[in-house]
Amino acid sequence: QGQLVESGGGSVQAGGSLRLSCLASGLSYGRYTYCIGWFRQAPGKEREGVASTYSGSGSTYYADSVKGRFTISHDNAKNTLYLQMNSLKPEDTAMYYCAAQIMSCGVRPLSVASFTDWGQGTQVTVSS
Image (cartoon, rainbow, N blue to C red; front, side, top):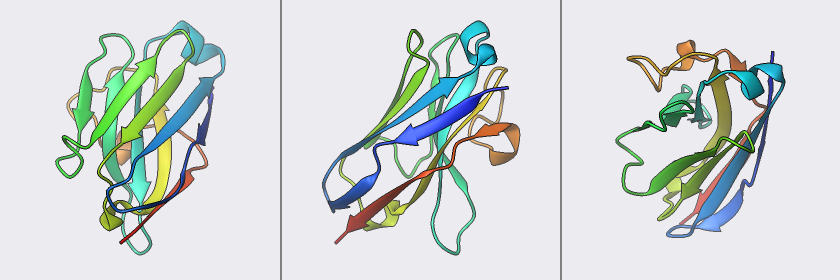
């Protein structure tokens, strides 16, 4: 069983940038390849997938709403996931969660139901 800890959230103006980090710790994440990603949940809305990546191949997956603005990356040696968020919009305001599963990303790489381990979240607020 592993633990995920996010950091890097904050408040920015529209058009600004933020970089989120997620440290994955525990025996499983140091031993196996896994799918890991970022999800977000705005007040009154369902949690949605933002981006994910498979540690084995480096394949990446993005929600249409963030393509071209967000970049997901993973440092295998540090078991750390990053999300570089550029050109932020007020609609990006949400709690951002890191999540992982000890398996490939499969056919639904941004499905909330597919991920077993979750972090506590970090708040991102974008003002207009």
